[in-house]
Length: 202
Image (cartoon, rainbow, N blue to C red; front, side, top):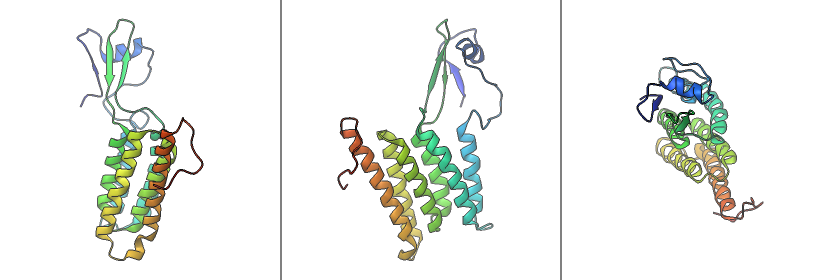
């Protein structure tokens, strides 16, 4: 998939259009951490998945990787994501493709969850990440829905793979915190822009 493309036929290349619109930055064939959040996310996801493999079996390292991912996702939750259109003075436009927040979340949670569904500490760490995102995302309905959806999938997989119910106590508590925060965000959306101290029980 192209990282950027022109919306119309033009002798200008995307680099020239971006420069004409005042955007500055390096161009190249390799992905960079500075320009591509997905690249850094995938590297940390790979660390977590490798740590959870039967050959390594190191859930502590996986949890550390998830905690680092939490910082990244909390930053992404506050930012506009998706397609970005840049135009120069001539009217030529470049569309810079990008994932939306739910897509980033699904890729990250899905890979780690499938490798670590049998380990309660990993499920708890994923839910803690989702709760942190729910706190900062506020009234973004699409993002709140994505957070709640991923939390439900984490719980479903953990219940299937973990045999001792007591091992899921912290997991259930964190899932409830996610649910309560999402409900609080939705209640705030229905009010006149004011966030209530105590929303009704969901």
